[in-house]
Length: 108
Image 1: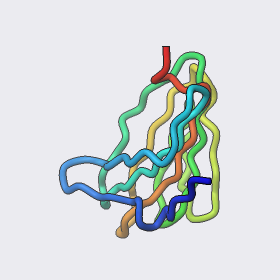
Image 2 (image 1 turned 45 degrees about the vertical axis):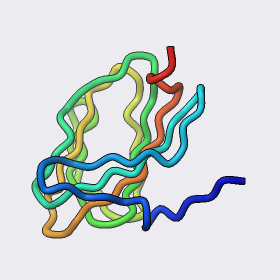
Image 3 (image 1 turned 90 degrees about the horizontal axis):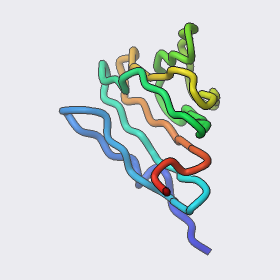
């Protein structure tokens, strides 16, 4: 069994949001994203893969399609395949997300 402590995995960069991979298989991946206040993940899409964001700490504004919503801890949101999505840390504290994506777009 491989177990990882998410709190130790989170990383932050003064330049841009930081991504740390927790697990990756041919079928999915799970990452931890760390955002300093004001940092963003640009709005983008994935064809053929769904993404789930889970807020662990902090709060941020999530855009899924044409809808924007401020989300905080213990909240999850789905970005379905082909739908534009992005995140901005609009709070004053760090934002930590657990992110799942399937199928894994990094595998051909």
